[in-house]
Amino acid sequence: MNYAKAIKLLYRVENPEIRELERMARRKFKFVVSMQRYSKFNKEEQENAEFLLRAYPDLQIAYLEEEPPRKEGGDPHIFSALIDGHSEFIAETGRRRPKFRIELPGNPILGDGKSDNQNHAIIFYRGEYLQLIDANQDNYLEECLKIRNVLAEFEEYSVSSQSPYAQWGHRDFKNTPVAIVGALEYIFLENIGILGDLAVGKEQTFGTLCARSMAWIGGKLHYGHPDFLNAMYMTTRGGVSKAQKGLHLNEDIYAGMNAFGRGGRIKHTEYYQCGKGRDLGFGTILNFQTKIGTGMGEQMLSREYYYLGTQLPIDRFFTFYYGHPGFRINNMLVILSVQVFILTMVFLGTLKWSLRICQYTETGQYLGGQAGCYNLDHQYLLGVHDRGSFLVLVPSSLPLTYLLELVERGTWKAVFRLAKQFGSLSPLFEVFSTQIYTHSILSNLTFGGARYIAAGRALLCWLRSGYCVD
Image 1 (tube, rainbow, N blue to C red):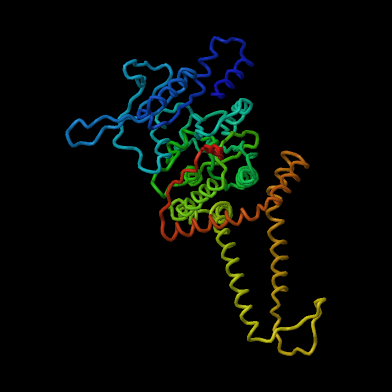
Image 2 (cartoon, rainbow, N blue to C red):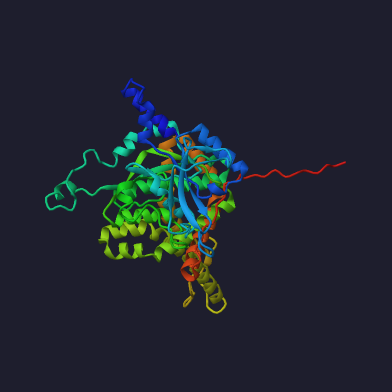
């Protein structure tokens, strides 16, 4: 609800009159919570929801309501309903009478639930722009004050009165419309442990440097829920969420591919960020990476990837490839290269017993008189491999995290964070991450079975009852 406070503050700065203050905020901002199981709440959950509605009367809740079949043996009737704090309270049931109640043709929960939850509530949104955020995200009031600047990124200062399909109106629409404006996510649980720090560092690198560069070269899609959507554009061109079970496991990116394939532009903002809280335990991080990996495997099989891969020009195709599937394929190639290298070393080791190996002095000088010998020294080969890996991998990966921290937080914090990550053996964690990504993609491409994995929102520590010692 900080958006409503921000709109009121901005309105008070320009207009001393406060008579239209509440009406202006309600007209400019609507907050709809999509909670499909609201009608099945128990007493405690119902009391908590009622407390929120009394504290924020403008808060709207969209939920599913089920009625028994009207004929014996028939299917139950499902309605999409909407209530708010101003709805009539029914004392007998302890619930509120819906303001709107729309019958649906069937059960809308066909996929993993999240996309269906968004789709059934999309009919209750009002306005031109839409932001779909998770329940574990929150906005700061300081960030909400930037809403005017963020909405200006859509470049809709003056809307043409001509039809875009008219013969004489094409000049007004020579610039493609902005479909999505990307935003940053700030995971504020980075200080709970080294695993949280590593995971947050990867998210920051992807959400800032990668998103910034991909937006500039035209390869950014829709990844996070803080992104702002041009609702009039998106809802008339494929919708905001895809909900087929399994295939649309990563539902966010399909909205970006829809906009990308239909001529919409996707931008990125550097000055706005939305807070996010997420469980950053070891098992939770690996579950999340498993979900992302299997979702990428399904994306590679989707028709959207086929359309973009066959219709894009070569420059935009490389941008799309190396920004999305190419990164995951690179993880697979890294694991494959390590396995091939180890297998090669095993074969070379077996040759030591059947071939004549060249001999060297303690200082590494070649001893003469060894005609027909083979240079299969393991230490030499491993040294060449280590130096090559260091020269290739470190310059390409170190600036992404170190320079980001250096620019945003200063020299000392950047050096301290880098030293802490190396001191805690963070490369070992990256080995686990790369293996998880590789196994998830390969298993999904081979056997399928992509499904939603609940990452969890619980605390990272549990209290256990102790025992009395006499």
